Length: 287
Image (cartoon, rainbow, N blue to C red):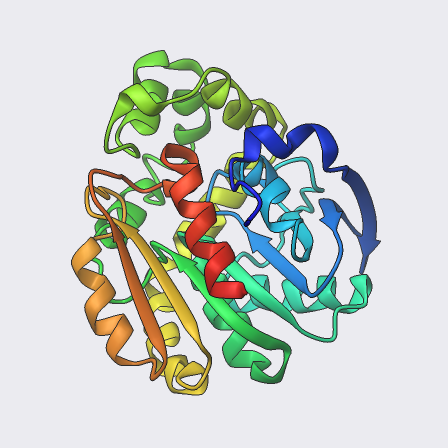
């Protein structure tokens, strides 16, 4: 009989290590659990390893799971003047793999982290066994293209951090629009995501990512032929308001061995909203 895939039931007997390392002068915070083939989890913009709290205990049954806080996010360092482009972020992830002794891994990325995962695979395809992409930012979704230009414009950019931290209505709107059903927002979710954003430099990283957003999407499209051979699972909620679910189809066409799972009634965060279904799909794909 298969073990249950409910993270809550496994939380008590799965040890999750909270670790730090310094690479090229930058402090990384990350979590590690389990044993077996390595799986590296990459969060989205304004997320961190907290995003995977329902997923780590399940995948740790079959793999050694690494969940990073990307530099600039979560509880990792925030170096001034850091290059926040997609290519630079992917190079840092490869450097993390070097430091952790990971010759190769299965790579799971969500939203902006999904774009980073694809870029990592394009830069070093021999190091990525499988890709799991959860509503990945991609060239065929218009969401973000105009917003990135607006938020990084000279009149708006200086106000962005103060507005996001102090206006409750905007925080609530941001979180609620990511769910297909807001009744699925679990206690502590909003507080967990907001906690590291109060550290100095958090929104500078977000703005840095947004400044190169459109250039990065063009580059990503040119890189996709390099990952066409990598087995890939795409997961999308059909109520995703952040990355257009219809953009899954042109992306799927560019990868030869690509399975698309659409979750009905689910928004941008299926690992938050319906973690049991999400975990089951990822676990089955990897096994």
